[in-house]
Image (cartoon, rainbow, N blue to C red):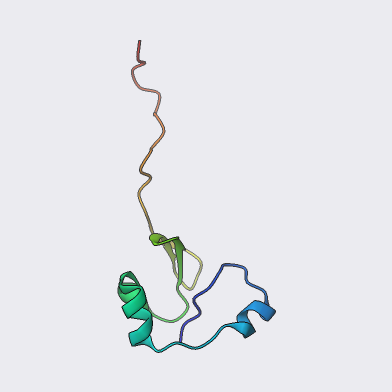
Length: 79
């Protein structure tokens, strides 16, 4: 199974969570399908509906969403 919930949730919150069939979960959030195929131990981070990052079981960054607003890198200045 998977844990799907807020990061850093305490044990009281985790224990109050219910169970949901995978088919029902995917009917509600079809964008979760690819991450459910990951091997055990991966951490997947969402910000609302958007996938932000995937970490390996060794806590290494495997994937991160590109920054939609990258900072300028000190090139030519606007006038």
